[in-house]
Image 1: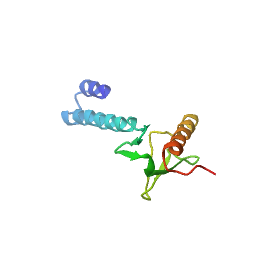
Image 2: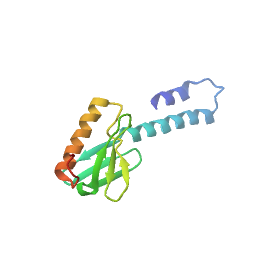
Image 3: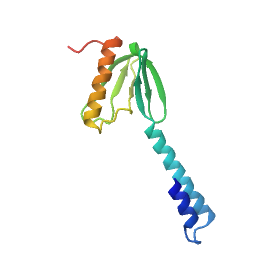
Image 4: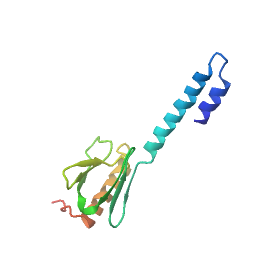
Length: 121
C-alpha cells in the first residue's frame, strides 16, 4: 500500500490526479482483500468452534457439527452441520499438507470427544 502511495507521488507529470488516486485506491482494495484472507481461522474451545472465513464468522456449538472432512486436493475442510448444510473452514489451508492433516485430525478428535458425532468404525 505504501509503495503505491509513493509511486503515485513520484510518477511523471503525464499522470493526472485521477490516475494517482486510482493507484492508491487499487492498493487499498488489494490490501483489504489480503487482510480479509489473512484473518481466516478455526478456533475451538470447550463449548464449540468459531469459524472465521474471509467474509463471515460463524460460531457453532459442538452438537451442531456432525463431521469434518477434507478430501485430497480440497483447499480447506468442510464442516457438515446438523441442519443439513455445510461450511468451509478456510482457516485450515489444504496447501499446507502436513499441517492441514494435523489440524484436521485435531479438530476431528475434539469433535469426537465433545460433540455428538459418532466415532469412526
